Length: 145
Image (cartoon, rainbow, N blue to C red):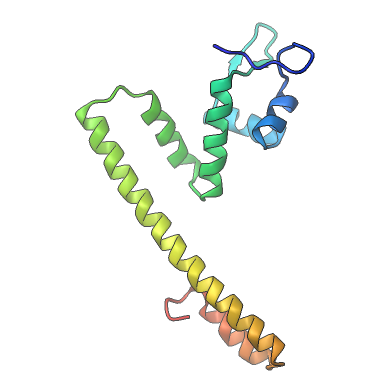
């Protein structure tokens, strides 16, 4: 295990690792508590971080940015630790198909929201009344916006 060191040649503390990972100390503690990511602990109870930990934390951060929930991230983490079997392969394909559909639905929603944002901007710039803006906002969750 390649333990990450700071500039002084000492093991990184949680604050240094958080900065390197691009998150907060609280986020790392939450990931540990939620059992998404649990670094090794020294005898003193302090967390010990390795290069592979950085890769895992960055993956979790990116999954959260993609609005993947904690339960699903836990499933992903289990898949990484599970030996590849036919059942694992099938489960992985099924999981990926579900995530792909979820991302597609979110992309469609964001496309509608971008269209509505453009419409709102145009309405505001044209000095349209508030009631017109309210009608436009009501359509945000509808498929025909």
